[in-house]
Image 1 (spheres, rainbow, N blue to C red):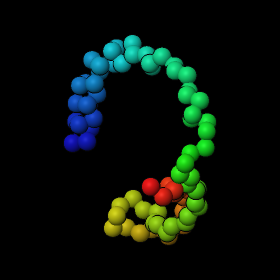
Image 2 (cartoon, rainbow, N blue to C red):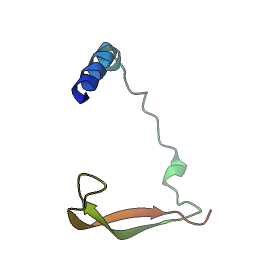
Image 3 (spheres, rainbow, N blue to C red):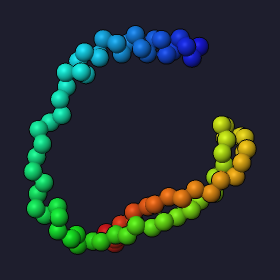
Image 4 (tube, helix red, strand yellow):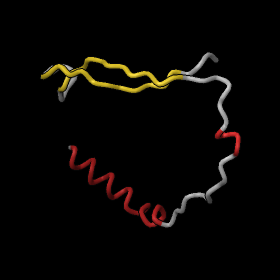
Length: 77
């Protein structure tokens, strides 16, 4: 079933490839000077660690892992 879906998706998307190849990004624009100014509401970067599992399904827990993530905490809004 998965192969049929993949083949179907490929044949449906093939006609779109030439159109996608001709697309160009919009023209570059100058970055406004205010972009480089400090903001009124500063935030902070925080490092956090969380526990999860290395597994291929939600039911299976093959090996415990601790992962690191960086998150941006906004200032007061």
